[in-house]
Length: 449
Image 1 (cartoon, rainbow, N blue to C red):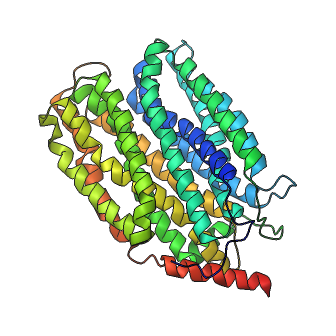
Image 2: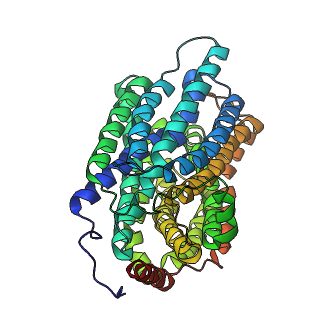
Image 3: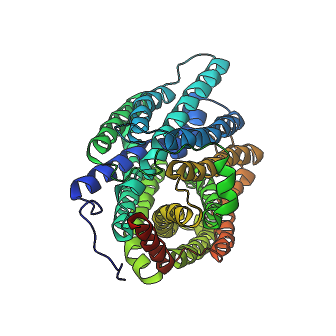
């Protein structure tokens, strides 16, 4: 599709920018994987915290985390320094986050009450620092280039790099634990150093070419205004809420599924590596499929196929573990497509808001989206602990039939049904490719008037 104008030198994304930005996203997702995949099991099986206590911890901490998203959005959009509006927060989030990651996975051997208090403090700090870094990291793409083709290239490549980071972290964490003899502090320390190094690389090499907003000030009331006046953003967030809720719960149950239904921690490690690799493959193929189908159709079709695959996997427990690992990787192909494509759709809502309503507010739109992501993730993560407690899960013993069936349902049938249902939310989403291109052209004409 022809864009109707040539790409300016400032809009063209260099290889140095692309590589640095992608590495920053990969390092960011090392933190993400440690939180969403391993933290629950670390707390229950290594620290000795009850599953219900961990579920409550996740819910309470993430309630604050969701609120802090909105605070960061206002701060970012009201920040105007000679270093840019995003980079000061990238430096702050990377510094505090790397320290907090190490502390979170270093719970001392003290009383149960002391462990709970320590977990609340360190996880609270880690979640806050992660938000401080994550919101400006992905909002940064909106000020690197305004060319829609270059921005799609930047966003899709960066999101794919983020999934590569998830895959590597999923693949090497359990082997590293074997090497370090279950020393989670050592593993977290290595990841913290990698995260900090890649973050500083992004800060050094990714330029904020478009400082928008003319230093206008935004108040928190703009969030309600966005919800009322930006329908594409609301529809996209509604879909993303369902998506992230289901993924958080499914990821949480994945470790328990292979450990207790197939009695193999080796299978658990193999599944993490293989499934995340398939997710990366899906992310790479998304760049091909999106040219043929467009982002909206690609999201809807992927959600239906993903849900159907999950439902069929209810019967996998009757098969050998090797087949179970292979078949459970299938949904992750569509998961990779969805994750990257959704990330590419969010900047379109920013351009739409500037075109339709005269307000850009990159930081607040990304933080509002992060708010709903954290909220849905908090509910999904807490639900993991509550369902485990409800079905009678007991760590490190043979599970009852009720507990085993509960884990199986939560890993297959429940997410499958929700994935299929949520695809219909995008029917009224209006930002198809041709409309987005018209919006960008109109905005360029405004700046030249």
